[in-house]
Image (tube, rainbow, N blue to C red; front, side, top):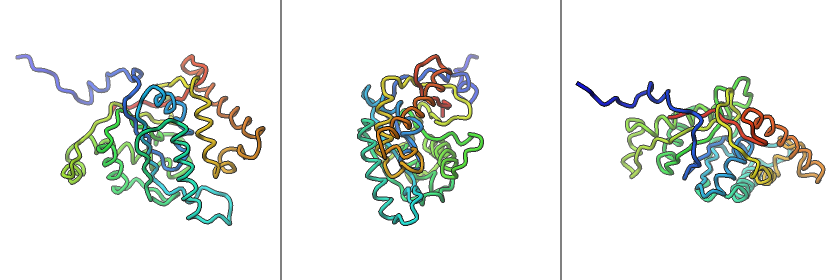
Length: 257
């Protein structure tokens, strides 16, 4: 008797990890404002230009993102949210922009975090989800590690009906994205050409002026400093491009959930 083979982890493992068409809907999930722009800003801008609906979920309040000891945390939170709105506009993101209220620097891969991610994946139904690679060696920031694990676990929950079933009584349905793209990967196997969108990536990053001193080499202080910052990002993009025979690229680990 011949039976139709079921889809399982063995058949999923044989799928080509490189083939990824431009998606219709994307959800990028970062711990902080500017995470997505650094990790995937060129890819997001390119996809947005092609008509993709980009949604962005920023999980923490960004309240520790300063070296200024006199900075008021509440004012910093408000400033970083305004910067993220401007960055989303620069990228062409037309989907949802969602701010979580987890405390910056104190994020853990908790049931609460997984529940939040599962809900937004089920609500927005993205074809592709992007976040940090939690398997990256020596990744120092605890929030970056935690958000990577939280997204992986939250996407698994979103696809299966027995995880957080109360969400499914609120009008949501389970959802399985076609792919997860992990930026800053330990082992890259997918590369996106950002030659046409590199300048948009820089423009989006420059929206995060509160981070000029902490992560951008004072890029907002002068035209020369901005050029040096852009050159550093270009050099990084060139190295990624060399892996795939591209001029400029962003590299990812591609998972099929």
